[in-house]
Image 1: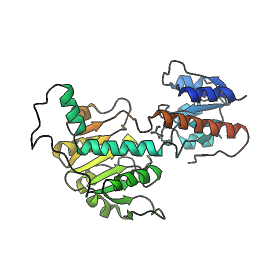
Image 2: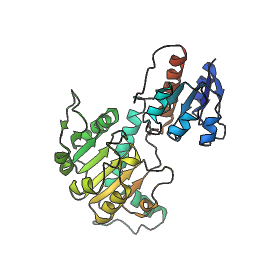
Image 3: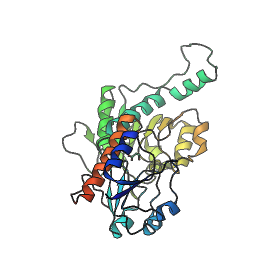
Image 4: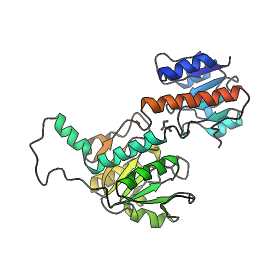
Length: 314
Ligand code: DGY
């Protein structure tokens, strides 16, 4: 049996399935791996996660036995794909299975941000509620507003479907129009930003999308817009988002992902109009189990000599 290193603990059903098909190198303490851990890996493949920083130096130091990085997750910005490919290491990911869970969370963040849920919840826990009032804690209605989806992939489309059910008008912007979708594609970003009363980010992190939400793009949104990010923290310039939350240019932001997780910018925590979650997009038992089984299916196909079901290329 090939040897598979699990860099993190996985749902029990996934670990059991992994043990049926691989000799395992496990991580019983669930401690995120360091570069030294990767260099000492005694395995033919790694089942890795977003907490593994597989930069060029770490990949260069991997033992030559490692031939596959089976990523537990759809985003692969934590892996230097060029470095892995140069070393002849294959890469797979887990698309589809986390689409619904992540779209659900985008809606949770949008509603929570629009309706001041974090602020209200904090007030209750502080026993600071003084009673119902006609003008207290007024948020923003989503129905009738326009939602811009930046990056219309699977998760963007699932978010759009849900938001449309709330009565939102949907627009999207990205590299190209997606055939067969019922929503308006806005090819020119200059025409897109001013129409986004809410903006949900679903683009992959690339050199072109890094800090795409910055002082300039935020200033083009309608005043009082709502920002939602379930994609990657590095899509936003934190200084600019924090300034926009302070000025009211953004009425609120619902954020599930951050630059330098888990050490996110502490200024977010002191803003009353930020709604913050700790990278929970795919965090349901059903979804994390499906992700693990999908990663294992890729590893099994690879060692059987079959094409990867979910190959990732540069
Ligand atoms: C993903 O799948 O990319 C999630 O963010 C977890 O890594």
